[in-house]
Length: 435
Image (spheres, rainbow, N blue to C red):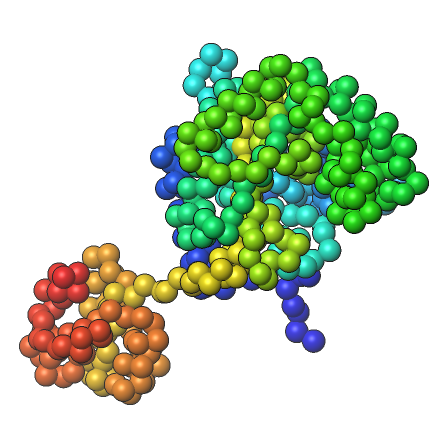
């Protein structure tokens, strides 16, 4: 049997890759208006970064991380030896921890300076059970803002994300924005204890994961997908009732900014997101479109004021979000939005016979050097077949080059939309195609 792609991965074929590039470019354009600049971090980091940053109690760290290890280190482990912590590497399951590590390592958010606003895009890896909208290798676009704790940063990020979805073509009426506050270290410990006590009272009716979470991070039980657990947690104590005055004020200001911008939202007191580093504002964008099934969340994030300290030992507030590319593409297709990106071919040079192929080849190079996207036949097709190929490639114009045209250093240039045809000199071809 021929070798197949790994389970839980997808090949981005040319048409998919073109749309992915359009997706990323659109994000860069929209986020750039808000001051976000690009960054790229390694596909793998020290495992300790994710354990400390994301949280040991999360499914991501506990069950889903892929470990990367060299052959020599694998041999050492199999022989019963130990390897250095720096040699314990994992493929990144999300982008935030790596970006925060880079900001700390390179001093991109100096105390008292402007906040670091960065955008990333690329593949992430989680050892999940593959299903529609949930892959082992998936792609995310995200932003991180380090160095500002104002509620306006939270609101700005949420508004920016909604603007992106609108620009990429997702219908506003199909989206819903959920928001909540998870409090901070001043008010959350008491709330966590109340939730832990509630879980322990109902432990016999809850799954093993939620029983385990009761002592490690009881708030994660709100994110459990088991129906029985969800029903029980619906009656658990809610965080809005436990927020301190500072967190309440922050949350109210975020909502006031959203109201002023005309952004509709739903307050969901059970929204906790899936990672341990979040504090205060959390949000999630879901789509209500037939065909999405349980994978309705296409993006989300929030504030993580304690993550920088976990990663570097230095205090710095943070905010960010991530967009799931594959989920968003599914949502666009389910909403009937055309996501295929047409290959751009400005000109196809059709050679009538072998005597003109050398001239046609050199003419194609000259046009490409001038910035045009040009195709030419390499398989000795008939002129009729070359026109079919030009149409398939989406060529805007076709330059027909026969012996007579070559002798006069000109082509017959046909507009594929209007079918109008005119003689054009070699040295005027580029300007004629552009016109």
